[in-house]
Image (tube, rainbow, N blue to C red):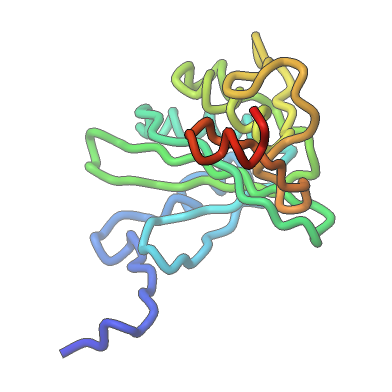
Length: 173
């Protein structure tokens, strides 16, 4: 019986007789590397300069279904934002994750995956990552006049009183 507290390890795609994502894309992007993750999703990392090219290569290899784009903030690192793209191949029934690190600017992949339109806007709004080439990079969740980006780990917390009867007396609202 396996220990449920033991960390998960990635199962390489090669075990299903399929080459890894990085090995498939390495012809077009020599700098791409395989990454072992704890969640067993096949992952490859690419330099930010090849982000758009890597997204195009994913489509060329059959990963045409956009699933998610998200950002992780590492405020102590020079390239503080890790941007992750998850796609799916219907033909191979296979998920892959592509990730890169950036300071604040990254090429938009909207021209490759139109479904990422609002995901890039959300990443801009909440983290401040600027996606060059995005057709409408404006705030999507917060008001236009909002200062800062609330999901950055170094952004100060803001107290927003919730309008309950109890808080009306406390905040005199």
